[in-house]
Length: 148
Image (tube, rainbow, N blue to C red; front, side):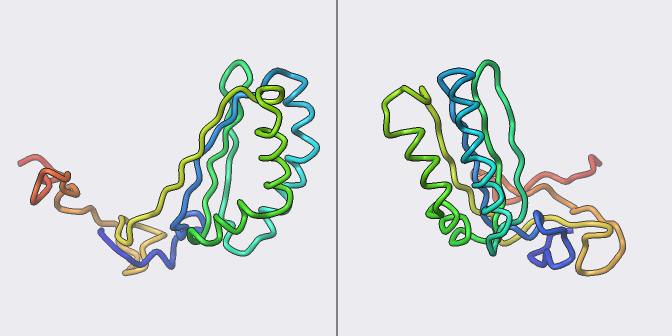
């Protein structure tokens, strides 16, 4: 069911801003030093208005990444300005490659429309599928979900 009402969705489903980023640290010593500020930063992030959910991922050998969801872009950007996040970013970037050798950040915004079914469906409690896929940028209509 296509919808723009996600009021019945869990907090992460109501988020409209997403952060994806990763940092390749110099080595185990950098990652160990990182933990002092990182735990403070996560505690602060969880307490902020607009925080919805996050997870951390690891890529061998020294890359740590984060995927985080916020109620809106302003909430995400307010977190980026917070004390512990600022301290961490300065530590990562202010000393050349002493602490980290690379990284990236991407910010995404949710489209107003999406899909819902079952327990998270605000329009009712029945499960339903959409009749056609969302069209690509080169299409005027998407193909049917069920093949005829």
